[in-house]
Image (cartoon, rainbow, N blue to C red):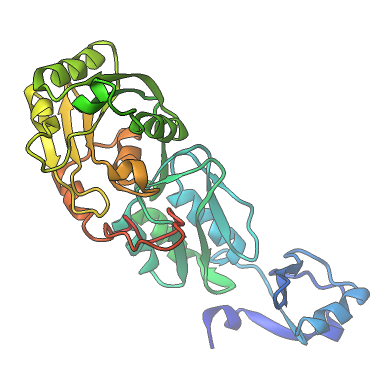
Length: 345
């Protein structure tokens, strides 16, 4: 017999009038609804008996509260308080579960080792969305509950002692000012019209940033490097360089970025789309060499790296390397990113 059942007694529903429910009673209507028909704390009335029988409750469990034992709702509240960090709003307990919601748009960051430690304690469930992805204000990002109706208080105290820092956090995006440098003689001389700039402006605006300007340069390395440095001198928080990122000998963008004196973190990324991506830093300002796939694909290397940068996270060469696990786009007929495996290594 389980620990919880040893602390409760069963009484027939017909004899439960006047009893106080110690847990939610759930009703499931296939294909229509699922939820509590009666909440914890409800006093059973005579008119409730047919409803309880209809949802399959011929007996109700009642228990006497003890100081060393926690009800599922109380346990969930203590777990949530221990693991929820910055910019997380907690829901009210429902059927023993508390959900976490983002209080702002930002980057969801999960301490994966601590998450595993909590779930290894037994009788405790803590579940989240994948770490290091963009989340919207109000979005549900995780939830917690205990498995039994009642749990030993000592187990929750042990969890609290193990979680010295929050496990679930949302890092808000900074309102970055972005300079766009578009290279290529065909665009610079007006032979074709640039289509990349408007796409990037939309993408950055959706992430809370703003584009301070776009400058066109030829394939001349000095012109391009000067355009990058001028944006930084004017206060840009990030530089996006488009064009010239392929292996064509005429494509000089990587060399132009190196010419600024920037530190190259990575040239190339194990992601498809996005293999020709470049990340560098100059005076702590990220410089992104963006391949053409960013313009055409809903999900690309842009969506995996830029949210991290806007949240103030340093992106290292190892971070880029780890994108290889999950970095292969399945090219679904209808893209549903971020509800897909792309970038979820």
